[in-house]
Amino acid sequence: MGTETAAGSDPKGPASRGRPADPDIERRVIAAALAVYGEVGWAGFSLDRVARRAPVGKAALYRRWPTKEDLLLAALEHLAEPPPEDADPNDLRGCLVAIAEQVIDMFVGAKALVLPRVLIEASQYPPHFDEMVQNIVRARFGGARMIIQAAIDRSELPAGTPPDLIIDAIMGRVISLIVLSPGAQRAAIYARRDYHAASIADFVVQAVKGRPGG
Image (tube, rainbow, N blue to C red; front, side, top):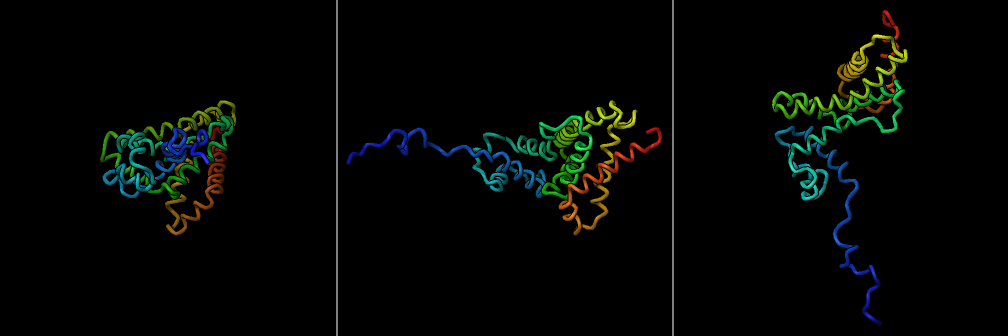
């Protein structure tokens, strides 16, 4: 029997060198970064701590995000997820339900500790955190404003309705629901997120349509 190895089967050949890239690494790192930041805040946040939580190799983490500022900014961009690329720009109700779902996620979901941290630390670490908060608001609600304005233009909502009034009403109702519910009941709110989001969006739209001049 010979000692020849079939082409491509050499364990030391190029095809087997190194570990294959992990396509799930970014999702794990972002989730770990949000969790770590929510628990320990800016003072305790570090790349090493995130790498252990993910878990990922430090080298891979540092190549993608060289500083903790880079990583936290990238993570905060996912505090509220953008709408899907195939979202219907004429689907007003779908847009408003999505806003309500996002707010519920931010206050009682897995990311519930993050937003309070950001709001508190925005005043302690300017300009980093204040700029991050503003970027999140602009990125996540800018598209919603355009969809609401389009609904006004086609008379689905009363003329002259301020788009921010719709967004504020939905956010305010969600926050009220959460704040006025005992802590032990908040998990149940999250479990019925879809129901609460749809109910709140529908209520706000009907209230706006029924307002004087509507």
